[in-house]
Amino acid sequence: MDAVSQRVLEHLTEVEEAAEEVLSSKQQVVELDSRRNRNREALSALRTEDTEKVKVCFGNMFIKLPKLKTREMIQKDQEQLDKEINELRKGLKAKVNRLNELQGKPELRGYSLSPLSTEEIKAINSLFKR
Amino acid sequence: MATTKVPEVRDITRIERIGAHSHIRGLGLDDALEPRQVSQGLVGQLASRRAAGVILEMIKDGHIAGRAVLIAGQPGTGKTAIAMGIAQSLGPDTPFTAMAGSEIFSLEMSKTESLSQAFRKAIGVRIKEETEIIEGEVVEIQIDRPATGTGAKVGKLTLKTTEMETIYDLGNKMIDSLSKEKVQAGDVITIDKATGKISKLGRSFTRARDYDAMGAQTQFVQCPEGELQKRKEVVHTVSLHEIDVINSRTQGFLALFSGDTGEIKAEVREQINAKVCEWREEGKAEIIPGVLFIDEVHMLDMECFSFLNRALESDLSPVLIMATNRGITRIRGTNYQSPHGIPIDLLDRLLIIATSPYTEKETKQILKIRCEEEDVELSDEAHTVLTRIGMETSLRYAIQLISTAGLVCRKRKGTEVQVEDIKRVYSLFLDEARSSQYMKEYQDSFLFNETQAPTMDTS
Image (cartoon, rainbow over all chains, first blue to last red; front, side, top):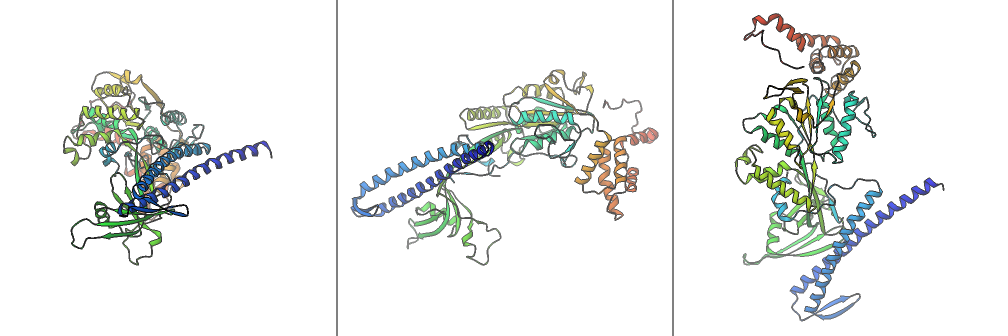
């Protein structure tokens, strides 16, 4: 293989790798969100439960645990999940940017802006509705 | 998708004078900024187009703001065309405001007010809105109403995306807004997490066959992909003037009725400026200096020119492009003569692009483009005749003849405009020179005839 095609190949590999990273991050967010939703369902199920102890499924085993402790455990997990998803999203932005750069696409407009607060949005909301 | 990018909606109104320059698509430059002879509706004027291209690149890169450009040249040499070309090549994201110099003379508004508004229309502010939403297809809604009719309702809402499915417990408020929006199984909805606002996006494609008869307004959408709880970012571009308007509305209801007329208080503008600068420092806003185009700029008077001088120095200032067809003439509102009717101190700040009269070949090409634009077929001989008319009278007159000759041709059920059609409209409508000739011959029979009065200075 001559030098030119070698370089093209290297470049394409780089682009593919960057794209793969974007896709895998996305998939990870999806998985985490689905876990988050399952946890949320569990929390609301706990709310309606009136027995002292509940059965919790770990892998393929059911363990009886006190209700309070279970709730605490799930809530902790939820917080952890929220944090992880936020981290992933932040990382995803940088990854998408890198991919765009590799492909020679211009940076998305207003991509790195920080969002306005809710009150600020409300103040000028009427401009967006048209 | 983690971050859904919604295509930017163009918010800034683009005022275009339809007609004379509707065929212009850009400046007709290649990648190296070299002008092509005929491209994107522009013909010739290579030097000025190249100059405009350089300025355009600087505007795009945001290198220049608060600068001013003057396009000067004889009537009918494509000044407005070049400005339109710049506007078209700027793309949808850079605000472009066009006005004629005479637009500032209004009874409702002071001259400086309408200039301020025009300036602020030409400055865009890019901001981002970020919302956490739950987006999914409704699988099932289950609402339990208490038998007594009063009391709390409870319910469950099952939502899914292509990847997952989950059940939400519903409170009273959510149940109310769901029934208000008439959400049913098969709808694709979004719920704003912060406000709890529900909006229906449409019906899922998989449910397209649920009913035989459906309203024409029913929209079918794909079942959303990915996670249920998404973060949505929308980038908006608004002009400073639009922000001004909504903030001055609270002061008086008059503005509500008449769109954006009425004057905006200086304090409001100052507050907005302060806020926008604060946003910029916090990384919440980007300022896009756009372009303000003032055609027939010699119509402005001394006050306006001194206002322009001052306004260009503001740090929130667009690029100002002006066009004039005047030579050395009196500045409006004074007795001083100055080149282009513009005071020397302002002239000193300008980059000046000159346009020169078109050659015969170029005139021919322009007429051809206009014929295509106006959907008029022209025979070769007629084209040559029209070009001659264009050279001897004016390009504008020749362009006027295209559509009129087209009408005459249609009247005699022809498909192609022939020389006789041109001849006919040429005899029907006088050009400027023949009209003045006529005046000179028959001036005695006109009313209010003042032969001694000085003629208009158009040098």
